[in-house]
Length: 153
Image 1 (cartoon, one colour):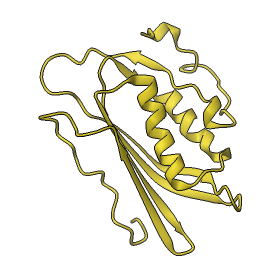
Image 2: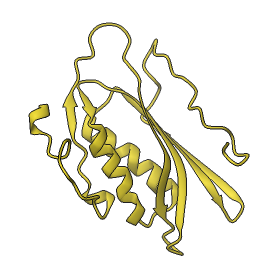
Image 3: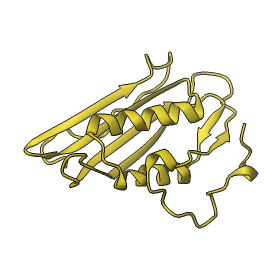
Image 4: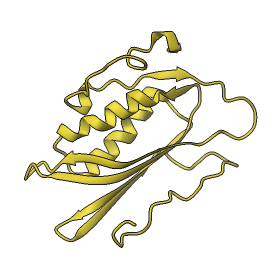
C-alpha cells in the first residue's frame, strides 16, 4: 500500500506524460469502514484524444464512478493520466475502456464504471460504457449528470 509520503506527483511540478502508457496512477490508502461502500466520482468534461486515422482531436465528457476498497486513486496522478490522452491516437471505445482498466489495475476497487460521452465527428456521437460488474449492494449511484446528446448541454 502506498503511503502519502511516497507520492511522487502531488505537490511537485510534473510534466504531462506523452502517452497513457507512460502515465503513473498513484494511490493512497483508504479506510472504508463499516456499512455500504462509498462511491467516488471523477468527472472530466474536457477530455481529448486523437483520432488514430486522421490525427484530429476527439472530445469527450468522461465520468468515472468507483467503490474503493483499500486504495484511492490520487487525483493529480489521475488528471495527468487523463491529460496524457491528448497525444494518444485511439478509437473512442479503446480510450474509454483503457481508462477503466488502468484505474482497476491501480486501485483494485470493489466496483468501477466509466462513461465516455464523446462529441460527434461526422454527425454521430459515440457513448461508451464499461464497468467491472454489478454495483455493490446498498450503494447510492447518482445519475451521471450527462445529458443525452442534443449538443451535450
